[in-house]
Image (cartoon, rainbow, N blue to C red):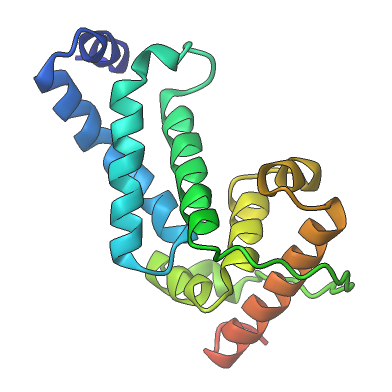
Length: 176
């Protein structure tokens, strides 16, 4: 079955199609959840909420953009809601200018596990902004709107996240 056929069958509550959609997109969603949340258990909880929303709100997918992108967006929103609910999104409003690059040729060889380990060392606010900006490609205005902070707070959080990532990678021998 094609993706579109699976979606249509899922809309008809076909359990096999729903299972196939889950199996296809749960790993993608888990990757997103894991980048935002330190705890594997928390990431799994958010994954369950994400996939529940995906499967119960298939009618909301309008076919604009990729289905995977739609699933990723739900996972991001669920992860951020989890962080808000647990009051883990502490933001520091001080704007600092850091122009240190986070990635270089040495860091291109990092495994996903090594990247996750480094991300896990960041406070939740830094990690959220870093993921939204660097990984997801959002602009600071969008991040500010999503997180309910100022644009300068978003910029500051990113700068501080980059500085911490650079320090962590340097400490682990991946950066100069």
